[in-house]
Length: 186
Image (cartoon, rainbow, N blue to C red; front, top):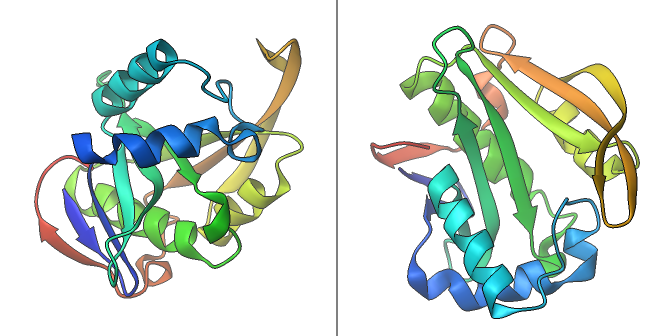
């Protein structure tokens, strides 16, 4: 899948993205609300990169310059009884607060709902990750529940908030200026 928005290009990860991906995942601020990272070894990086490629994550780059700024994707369920997906994303720190992830994730959501006949998307967010919660709400996700001490990583338990978005709730107008350049899996 290749998507373009007014300012961004969302496209499959490529091997030349690896240095920027390594820098992204080595940043403690970026990894603060993730189960993993910051990445400290080549072995960790290789495992994470392989997992991201397997999950169908895509790179996000600035259209004007081609600068790689993060990842976005939807891991689709293979279970026919649960036709949905789980969104995930990371953005390099210099690009925070400028609406880039709303634009990228909005494009991916629009493509998934239009192309893949997905009924429901979900996101799990750490309870103290207010910026991610705001992003999801701006895209129409609803807070559906709280999972107390749901996960254990980085030396402690973490409460996760569950957000959901149904295809019937999605307002395609939220993904302004999105054009699908080529088909494929989001």
